[in-house]
Image (cartoon, rainbow, N blue to C red; front, side, top):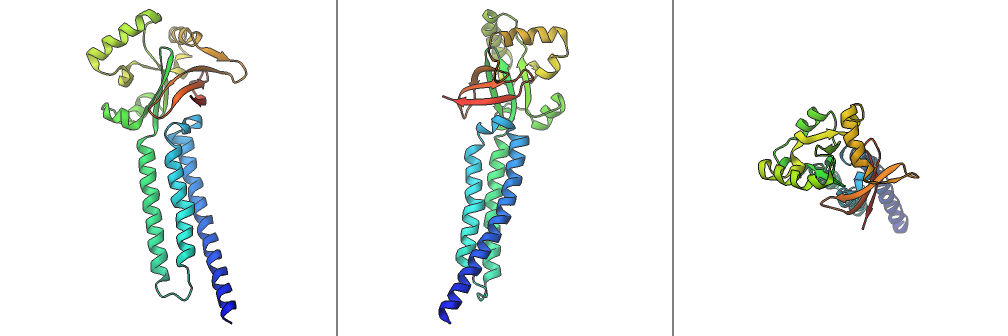
Length: 236
């Protein structure tokens, strides 16, 4: 009888683990969808999201179900309390991970000269801008834009230096952003955008432009479409 009871108890533990794992996996899929479609869309997920996602996955689909497997015993008087504590710890870990990821979300990708600069939320907030204000001004976050500088590479460095002296780091001066999608509809702006794109390496097979990537998480290059969407990120 003792062996049967132990086997039954073990079977119930595995069942509890499986149920917990299925619930946690469903939650994780929802989290990944939010991160992939809104906070770090497409290839941008490689720029600051992978480590946070790994931690969330570890807590959500490994640690939580494993603790449930360890403590689960139908005859235990404190089982409900134990499971409640595990769920609370798991939710706290998930909330913390999401807050950290949201604070590092990509809010802008700016073609400035011959480089694509990635701006994260914390950087923009430190520069005095709210994400809501950026969304209101440009209609979307992250905004895909190019920086409003002279159509002459030799003058760009001097112009950016002048802006830096007058107003601070040029990258965060959002009034100089020209949205790529809107620029294509304006003849004058389209000419300026085409000038900068013509300086980049065009990949016919991928249908995108290769450019040096400037990001605080990844050193490498990116390939972005004529609409400003980053299609590929390659780390050095």
